[in-house]
Length: 393
Ligand code: FNR
Image (cartoon, rainbow, N blue to C red):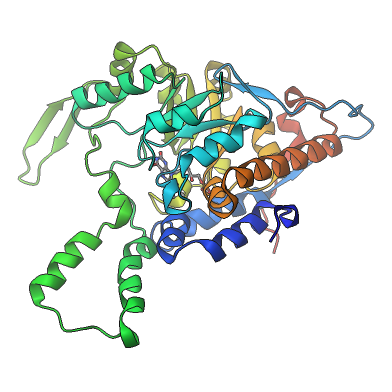
């Protein structure tokens, strides 16, 4: 359909589903195990309602804000997601070009399908890009990657901490077999040797995601010394560096921790002096039954409101509407990240699709702010939102 018929991010997702290959749809849309957390990330928003204020002047309405000091036209950024080329030959560059006109900041995935340089060169003069950082287990290699993105003028490191192994994404793992079956006349299994089958199972058992995180550091810490009991009962100490101070020692770039999933870790992150905390469960793709980020944001607001004064807090996961964004900002999020909808938009319409969903969100946000009685993001206060203990049907 022509782009003007796309009215919402859900419409965009429908078009993407119809144009994407089976494999790309499986990789983009899948989540861990029974995909409960992915579903609940979105459903959590329907437990939060507004207590709107009326009779407030809203003819001038400005939804802009800053993230780490960089201006954005709406409180939204692109959460880094791997392999945009699976959906469109221009891949991540579609997102770079599509976000530029509206000053929305793109976080580029460590596992982008274009090189970091190709993406940087698609940017307009002055356009800000963030870098999603998967720390390699070898410090030297990790440091080289930081140097590379510093040279390309990426403005911040978003250290992903929720993916020390890949989540169990069964639709993604299955997709090569399903493709194989579809390609075979009659869909039946041709005779294969036991070795062939074992080899294929070995390769397929981790899916696309497993291959992508194989070299990442599994010993990142807030503290210096890590002790654990081995299977033979011996108590061992491994001395590892404190990851945040180590990154600080090699770069001046701001550091955001991506993938914090409880209040206690948000407090530890603030104590470690990070510049931002992204409450996230990776779009439900990592630990199944991780709580929805909106609920953690709400808990953090109740239990440790001081954290919001010490560092910027963001959430991502399941966000598709202007009202979702407004609820998060009311509860103290500086901005929200959006992952899959940007992949879908660029797959369906290239850079124009990306600009389109930002315009949709901008309109939804402005409408929502006016109806809430808010004319700037500073007016979006916790009192405007109430958590209910029932779920609308
Ligand atoms: C991701 N995400 C992700 N995160 C990350 O830190 N590094 C990565 O390479 C990727 N790759 C990736 C691929 C795909 C296909 C998806 C859907 C997600 C997680 C991403 O940054 C973000 O946390 C979620 O996508 C947010 O949830 P929504 O908006 O997709 O519901």
